[in-house]
Length: 202
Image 1 (cartoon, one colour):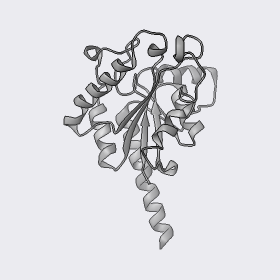
Image 2 (cartoon, rainbow, N blue to C red):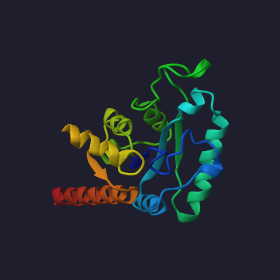
Image 3 (cartoon, rainbow, N blue to C red):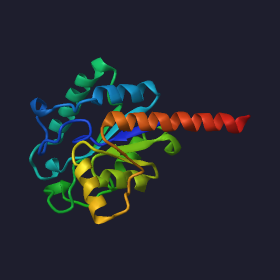
Image 4 (cartoon, rainbow, N blue to C red):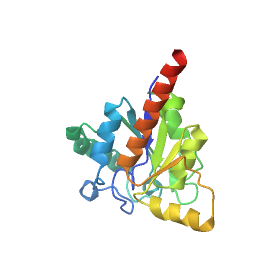
């Protein structure tokens, strides 16, 4: 079974850019190389799942999305931090044009992209996680049946503050200031789970 960390893209791996699609605008966030490498070294598969409404709106095409993902992996691989698989949703129920205007299972917080990942990976939900900077990322993880981690980069910190001010109960299982913090939390949790399982076997 595969232990998988599902990752949002914009605001989690790279700096948030309005409808990012040009390779020259891609900037990896601080600590991301280290975080992804640590997760890979710990045995996790890394899978990006990202809503790309810019395709639906006609701002750019699927070719640009795929080119950007190839370029991202070219940046990550020298650091031992590459992504095993990218999935993206090109649809939007209101603002999409043509075939891209529709309700779909793949748009987060739907679980369609997780289901697509299951065609490639034998996902072990007991040892898999969802990390992102928006509540739809956390909710998508919850809907799929895995812990949702909110990361403070991108929109994460402001969303957390908003919830605290309103006195709302957090949806996320854990808040991490950075992706490095999220990786450390995941690895520590998995190590504790293994130790617990060994203890039960005695």
